[in-house]
Amino acid sequence: MLKFLLTETFPKGVLNIQLHRPEALNALNTGLLAELADTLDNAARNDAVRAVVISGDSRAFAAGADIREMADLNAIGVMNDPRPQHWSRIAAFPKPIIAAVNGFALGGGCELVMHADIVIASRDARFGQPEIKLGIIPGAGGTQRLIRAVGKSLASQMVLTGEPISAQRAYDAGLVSELTEPDLTLERAQQVAEAIAAQAPLAVNQAKDVLLRAQETHLSAGLAYERKAFTLLAATEDRNEGIQAFIEKRRPEYKGR
Image (cartoon, rainbow, N blue to C red; front, side, top):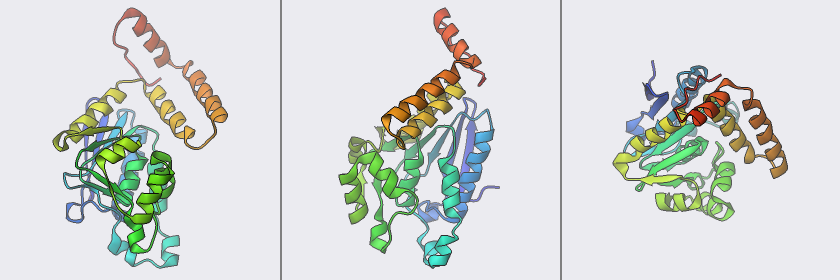
């Protein structure tokens, strides 16, 4: 029984996960992160799930970490905090994640957005890393992922001032892939997820892996890794089905094999 999440699975292979702590603007406490990591672990093992949409509500995707929970931790408590393990499991999820962002995505919420592969945001969304205003810094990848997503200057401004940016600026900087009207954000994210879920699962998972590897290695190593994945997919039934369907001008029927 989930306490902090609402989930719904659609027949086209999309799992919707809604962060559900409305009284706290979906602040990411330890319980919520544990439930999210557990839910994604289960989805990774479920062949019927081919893509995941993570959303909040109309006011907030997630307005940060749970500050009251953090306030009780000293240095030893932070060292023993289970949340880094939950974040690691979220980052290791092998299938595509689409974030549907309305309202605030701040602190841990912004970091969760950056764990997604694709970000669909409403025009009223706001993104920020305000930790500096509490005398701390981002602790779940906020500095490292943000600078890779938007570049050194904007990332430094966001982290060092703690001031949020608009959805339009996030889109212009590359943090967001598409902007929508607020009441269409989740619907559009589901459409994107369904388009991904219709593709060959092994190819999608390999593509995600190779794309993420591009952020962590130099070009020649990345190209070699890409070619290895390309070659491995040549041995799959889905690759043959995709090519044959193209030749026969019909819709492919992928089996994940």
